[in-house]
Image (cartoon, rainbow, N blue to C red; front, side):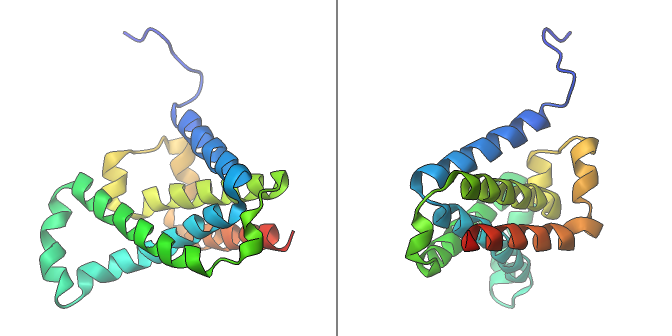
Length: 159
């Protein structure tokens, strides 16, 4: 028995919280940090796929695929490591937060996080989104999500 029933999936609230937190973080500390974090997700996805197929590291990481929480923690550690590297490359003028830039970068970060949840099976095991949201993040749209996210980041960079 549900005490409180929403007319929409709870996933919309989770997405809105991710967007608001990313936009406020960009507004407070500058869009450069959120831009670096957004750019670190696809690089970490690529490194994650390569890590399991590498010669030496693949044997060590073979046991990670059994537990989705440990697998997700490994991915988050990769995102943090790549973020620290990309954060050093971001120019200093991106450390100011303008409202429009913050909203753009917050939306780009949210789209990239959602795509990460749909690309990695371990993250999909941690949280499965509603079909209304999963429809937009099918593999056929991944290229367009990446392209759109990079275009939005470029627009925020040039503004």
